[in-house]
Each structure stands twice: as structure tokens, then as C-alpha cells.
Figure 1 (cartoon, rainbow, N blue to C red):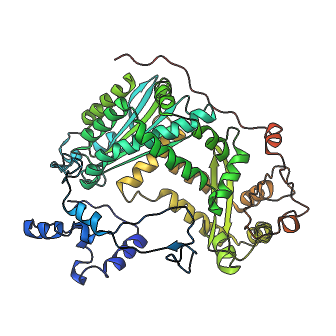
Figure 2: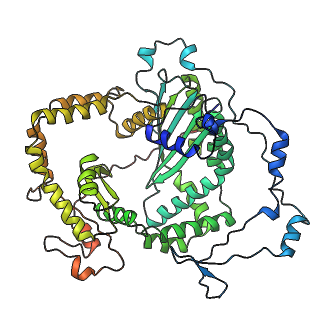
Figure 3: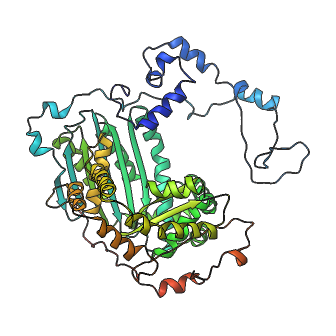
Length: 530
């Protein structure tokens, strides 16, 4: 089923997967081996299940406590201490002949999400395809929600993608609300695992995440059982209340994650950049302080407040009729009732580090350009100097570019803008991005075409002037921010303060003296009646 309707992969991922499969399967099964469920062999299944016994079990116990016993060994790579012990005979005997068996230990029930209907809707619906499926149509526009729909007539696979963004008015108003929102989402995901596991086996996927005051929900896969899965998810969201035992587990997980936030240099640099640029930013220390004082009763009291002011945007795209999309829309109503040159120069030529990235960066609606270099050989002062040299050298590169080369680059960018979507998922993501950014005009989703048309009018002088205005340090419109993460053995006093750098000593005072772009606020509206 999944092999029959698999979507196109990138050549790199496909080749990598085949190379891995060469170690698993005979050559004639390399492509099909991951999908081969052709026969039911009950004896083979019983044989495999026979290995599920205590004698074949290994238990890994991880502890942050330190041990000095002579029985512990030290592995040479990370200096971790470990020991290997046999499970005691008494414990093994108890496992082999338990007095009682936990009722939650059983084989899975029948999977209700296995699809049966693989018909293609665009083949059976009497529609003028050119007029009705060229771009998404708005099928619902109300004060609390807006839904878009597009029938797929290009890829003709029995798949559908549904994306939703739910604005939660009070989710990021304070440190406490931020932490409570995170706890709720993690607990909800934990509750949904029992549902989404069966769905995933049957070719349905889900994603649930939150960023500040925006909850993102994605449900995608075979369209036949997707409405049933969506209904089950939203019913769970509507009725879910956390239990004390799971609350303590998830709270401990969140505490551990917070403490690990800045252990990775790349993540730490991103964290510092957002701390400076974002007007409302809650530090890890602030979140940990609040987290330690929260109880399950605090979360239960917060949930009604969290869902009291909502705005939802949704997209239904793929192999479903408008009537089926409307059915999903009714379900949602129920819820309401409740970049290359940089890499070559900095990574390959100068060999500054393995991680070298650059590209446009959108931070809370403000567009910028970001460079990221991570190195185990050079400190941030050296990396910053090489970045400055690279940026300063762009003027000579641009001015020395002949017209044919410039037109070749421009033609490549135009071709990238106009390239056809290769999968249903690619098209859904593009349309969803335009919906959230409101890049459509009168429901015409032609942002790429308009951008390509604008690009055709740009010449090399326009690019040089843009570079001089926003990248040259002497320009009054050039704004630069550097976040540097130093290794633990670095002499910061001696190395980290070049004269041309203004160091932010007091972040709070710096942000108070800075101007921030205005934030859009949610309109307070009366919830829909059931």
C-alpha cells in the first residue's frame, strides 16, 4: 500500500536509503524490501514472539549520580562510567512466573485506521479542473476561523494534507503562561501517542507543536481514514485533563530539556540572538524558576483560559472533495465550542568549520540575513573576522561580475521560483506558507510568479546598491548583531573584545533603549455557540 503510493524523494535521500538497504537485503529486494508485507505466516510470527522472554532482555539503567566503585569501567570516548551485571536469578524467576500480569501488556487491537478506499477524487468528480483546482479556495471565513480547500488534480494519489494554525491569545502573555502552555502541549502529545501510533502504522501522520502563542497541528496521509483520525484527535483535545502522575513525568522531562537548552553551541547562539531581537523573550532561568513551583492544579485551571480566545486558519489539500473538507470543518467547529557561495568560501576554501550556513532569516516578521559558523578549530573572534572579510569582499565580486554571469545567476533564481512542485507535500507547504504570510491577492496564489516577474526587472546595479545599503558597515542602514558562544577553555577577557564591537553588557537596558517593530494583536471575539 505505502510502496504503491509512495511520493517522490530527493535523489540524495533516495540514494542514501538504497545504500543502507544494500546491507539488509539481497540486491533484487533493495528498493522494495522496506515495504514487503506480501504474506501472512502465523508460524513465523509465533516464532519471533517466542523470543520475547526475560532471558533475551537487556535493561539499560542511566543515572546522573557519580560512582567510584572498582566495578565500574570508563569508556574512552566520553569518559562515561559503566558496569555490566547479570540479572539476579530471583528477579528472573519472578519475571518468568509472575503472580499477576499488568492488563496494559497485550498485543495490539485491530487497527481502525487502515485505508480501504484508494479512489482518486479528481477522476470521479464532475469539475472543471482548470477553474476549480488551480489554487486554494476559501470555504469558510468567520470571525474565529478561516478555512481553505484545494482538490489535487496533479499528483493523483489517495493522500491529503491538512494544516492548522491556532492562535492562543494568552499562551505567551507571561513566563507562567508560556511554561503552562508548553506543559499542556507535551502532556497532550503524550495522551495522543496511543492514537497516533496506530494511525502512523496505517500511513497517517500527525505533528503537534507550539511556538509562542501559535499552536500548529498537521494531519496527513491516506485520505480514507483521515477524518476519523482528526475527529479522534480533536475529541481528545476537547476532553483532555492531565493526571498527576503524567504531569510529574512531563514536568521532569521539561526541566531536563530546559537545562540542556544551551549545551549545543549552535542552539546557544540562536538562543542569544532571539534573546536580543525579540521584545518578549523568557529566558531558560525564568522558565525553570516558574516550572519548579507549578502543580497539576495550576495547569487544570489554565486550560480553559488558554482556549477562551482562539483564531484558527486551516488548509485542506489533496484527495478529498469539498463535501469531505466541509465534514472536517464541522469537526473543527466542535473544537471551538470548547545558500552556496558562503559555504564554498567559508567551509571549503577557508575550512572554518563543518557547520557553515547562510540565508534569509525571518524573525517575528522582520527579514534579515544570517550567517552561522561552528568550528572546533577557531574561536569566535577569528570566525567573525573571516566573516567580515567575506562580506567586504562581496563588493568586488559583484562589481567584477560580467553581464552574462549575472543573467545566468538571475535565470537560475527565476527557474527555482517557477519550478513545479514535485510532490503533494511540497505543494501543500508552499500554499500553506502563502496563506500564513497572506501573500495571496483576491485568492490568487501566484506569489512565485510575481516574484519571478519582479526579479526579471532587477539588474546588477540594483544588487550592488542593495549590498552597499544593507551589508556595508559604513552604511547608516546596516544593522548587525553577532552572538558568540565560546568554548569553556577560552580566555574571554583577552580575546573576546575587539575594539570595533559594542558589547551588550546589560541586555535589559539595551532592549529598553531599542525600538521594536509593532506586534499585531488578536481581536477579542465572542466564541461561537454550539
